[in-house]
Amino acid sequence: MSILFLWACIVTQDAGTSELLARLKSGSAKEIASTISSLPDSTLEQPEIARQLTLLLNDERTVVEHLMGRETVGERAWYKLLDLPSTASVPVLQEVPALETDRARGQAFEAISRIGKPNPRAYELILPYCSGEDVYVRAQSIAALRAVADASDESVNQFGKLLLDSDPLVKWTVLDALDERHERIASVIPEIIKLLDNDANVYIAISDHAAQPEKLRCRVARLLAKIGPKASNALPKLKKLTGPEYNKNVRIWSATAICTISQSPTKEALGLLGQLLLDDMESEWEQNDAPLAIAQLGPIARALLGPLERAKKHKSAQIRWRLVDAFFAIDPDSAVSRCLPLMEDEDELVAEVAIEAFSERGISESRVIAAYIRALGNSDGSFDQPASSAVNALGKLGPAAREAVPALQSLARNPNISNVLKDSIADALRRIR
Image (tube, rainbow, N blue to C red; front, side, top):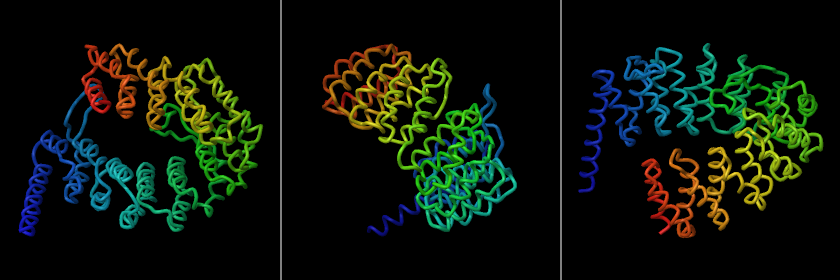
C-alpha cells in the first residue's frame, strides 16, 4: 500500500512539474512572468524548473513598465533564481552555454553564488568561465566558484592563480574568496602582499561606500588583518600606508593589520585608529571603517573606549551605528551601559541597530526593557522603525517582557501605524502571554 501511495505521489509531482514547464515555455510575457512569481518553493528543487528559469534569462520581453524603466521576463526569472536551493546549482550551470549575453551569464553565476555550497561538479563547470574575456562574467563566475569550492590546498592554489588577473574588480572578488579560507592560504600570502603596491580603484555596488570607489589595497589590508602573524612580511608596506598621504580607509586597515600581525597593538597604530574615528566629527556624510576595524581588534583595542565614547557625538549616523558592535567586541561587560543612549538616537537606523544588538544577545535587563518601552512610546506611526525592532525584541523575550504589555497595547491602538507593525505587535503579545 505504501509503495502504491509513493508511486502516486511521484506521478502527481511529475504531472505538476510538466504543467509548470509548459506554462514557462509558452504564452505571453506577462503569463510567463506570472507563472514565475507563483512557483511554489517545492518546485524550485526540480532540475527541469531550474534549467527553464535559467534559459528565460534570455527573454528580453517587457513585463512591467515604470518610471525607472522596465522589467523583463529575464529579470523576473533572475529574481526567482536567487531563491533556488543549493541542489539546483548544477542544472543552472548546464544551461549557461545557451545564454546569449554576458549579462545573462553573469546573472546565472550570481544566482549560484547565492545558493552554492561545496560541490565538485559545479566547481568543474564554473572554472572555465573564470578566465573569459568579459570582466563582469569573470568576476561573477569567480564569486560563484568561491561559493562551491572547498578549502583544500587545490582550491586555494586555484584562487592564487586567479589573483593574477589584470582587472582590479576580479582581484577583489578573489580576495573575498581567500578571506573565507584565510586560515589555509599561507601559500598565496606573498602574492597578496604584492597587491599593497596596487593603487587601483574598485567600485563595489553593495559597499557602504557605493557612491565612491574603494581602494584595492584597502581590501588587501583587511585580509592581512585577518591572517595575522603569518603575514609579518607585510609590515614594512603596511607601516608606509598609514601615512597621511594615503586614502583614509587604507590607513585604517593598515593600522589594524599592524596590530593583529604584531599580536599586540602599537601605540602609534591605536592612536591613528582613534584619530581617524573622530575625523570630520561635524560631517554628517563622513564614512570610514574605523568602528569596523576597532571591532575586529576586539579586547586588545580597550584603549580606544574613550574615543568610541566621544564618537557618539559624531554627526555621521553611519559612524554612530557602527559603534554598537565595537563596544560589544571590546568590552561586553560595559557594552550595555555604553550602548543604551544609542537606543534613543535621533536617527532611526542608529536606534534600530542598538535594539537589534541587544535582542540578538537576549539581554533582558530591566533597563533594556524600559528602553524598548520608550521606543514604543516615541513612535508616532510615521515610520515602523525603531518601534518595529523594539516590538520584535520584546516578543523574543517572551514572559520576561510582561511589563511592556500596556505599551504594546497602546501602540496597537495608534491608527497611524502600518498593518505590518500591527501584526508584529499581536505576535509579540501572544509570545509574552
